[in-house]
Image (cartoon, rainbow, N blue to C red; front, side, top):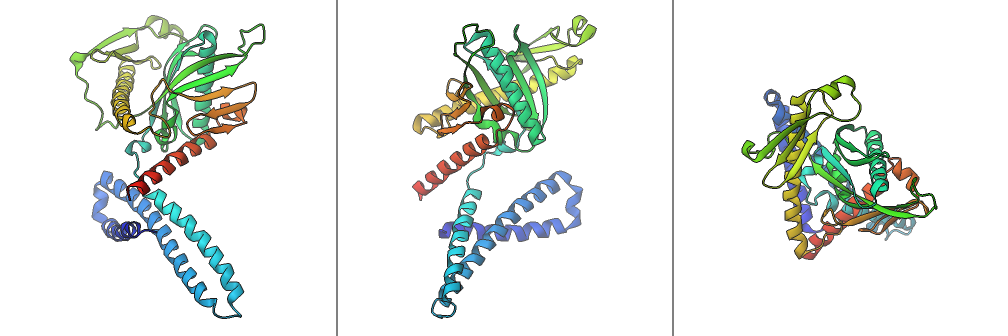
Length: 360
């Protein structure tokens, strides 16, 4: 381990002592927001310091085992301990390096998931419905809450467009790499000749802004329209203009919500989606500038990127950015996304490590 990393972990050790002292003072509990923030930091720092102490212990064990090699009676046991200690040291060193990689502050946030049908007509809309189900099943597996904020249904099923809010642990951090073009290859239900068609959808994953950090929207730059919600809902849907559509005039971005009977709540949700889209637009513009200097391993998040192919005849799923191919498409479409999410996170971590090593 490099001296700079050791220095960072020594500083974390001092910070842990400081946090323990602050939290031991009962007065801090009067400020619940600060108390929760410090408690969370304490837990994270304690985990890192604990891992670092394991690393130091195994280094000490390795040194002791090497000294034992000089004793013929202890040599065999010493060699076994040396092998075990070296393996542990390598593993712990990798964990510690990964733990100190720069983190995206948005990773902890909830997210808005937007799926739009693209090329392929009705088949694309059906695929958009399949993708929505896939993400909803994944959310269910993870114990997240999900809420469909708006949906434009297709005549034959599926969605022309659907916006879903996902709430839970590190939602954005797990799904942020899914933004981009998703391509499907299969025989559509409407195909009488059994020919394989290719169609596509675009997916956008946007972090939900905190209320305190939410973009301030100028009312003069907004056009707010009310309309009658479509779909299920009975007489209320047919007679009440409770659905809301908000247009941000400078950018042309639009957000709508029609899932609630309350016009006021629909307006609040649509404003939150619009703020997230504006924030996402700003992030993408900054990412595009960075990508002009250095192409990111997991893509820029550009909606035109074709990031994945879902090949149904072969049961094959491919993420083109990291050359990940899995032959378990049925399980993936049923929400088993763990291998995909972990593969993308590991690829990003490897790229970050390479960048840090290049600078050192």
